[in-house]
Length: 314
Length: 211
Image 1 (cartoon, chains in turn brown, cyan):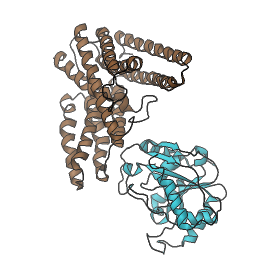
Image 2: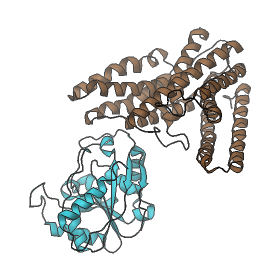
Image 3: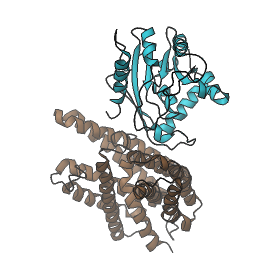
Image 4: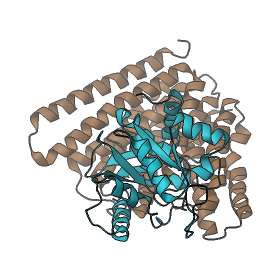
């Protein structure tokens, strides 16, 4: 249990309490509300809560195992997210081997670089090397039809699903003077980001009236956005003790996480609408695919990482 | 009867790579003797279809494969010994003479023998792998098979995205998520002409593509 310190323990206890509380609410809603038109929402809510128990258990387990656990978990999530993403987008026969590189070379390599703590290469593998490799490999095939679209589709998928998401376990590389295990920092990011999604959903369901971008995401409302961002920022501020931040800085950082998360959700929704689907996948019951759950993380993690690295790492 | 242990391992791996999402639309698994017919774009097709059937149906379901391709070496070992494939001679497209020895009648009888009274078959009536854009016209085998076995149950299964996972000519897979949609059973009507029946069967399959 060397990877578990008391602050991490408190955070876990808090999550456990929150899950138990949510399950009780879910059961109560199911028992009390009889309106047939609300049944769909309530059963979806309960499916979501059920999935949260499983996701939290898996995340906690990998966190306790240590860096290897987190790397394997996030590496797998990148792989599955990239899979959902490319399945949804048009690719051509000639893209086959380039895609093979994306899945089986670049994705594992990115996480391997975090594992060996090679920050310099981790930061440029995909934005520099994969970025240049992908169009060159496609050009070799000789198929020029929609060339730039095909190249950018693959580059973009690697950036979002692999590069951006890998910033979450990359937090484990950071050595912050006077701060304990960086695992707490990773948990903090995940908590604030995911609770922001949850709170936006909850506020949206309770008070949501005015849609922000009805075409892109019919469920996103101003009420949900403001309520979600404020409550998640409040939670993030209240959790300052598990970070290297002062409460005021924790508030600013939480705000940045929630705003980036919102931008991520909206952007990834725009792709879904363009392709005419509701969800990226079906892997997580009630939530959709990995990418539906991690869309906000893809945007929040890199920004959070660089804020911390710039201001707190010598 | 139980499936070969290696068959189960290969089927598990195929399911993992293909991430196949199986749906039965206006249709459900049935242990009665059936010919499952599907569009053909990848070597993974029959393994994915086979592994998507419930275990008790799977154990008595045999794929039909082209003799000229699957007859030798490791291919044969996998097809025949592991999956109990029924190897039949196929015709070159348009040619009236089969590629390998034997005649169409022999191929049909071979399939009927393999079915016996309780085995089901997996058949790709296009006869060869396509690119995934269009389902090619069906070969006549399906018709003759039904003619010999009046009332034979046919179930269409449309495979999406297998051509993206392992297209013709590639040996390394890319893990797209695939989908298999089974549709309602059909059968040859008495006195139904060959062309009308084959068109109807093909349409029943194509209809599953985007539902």
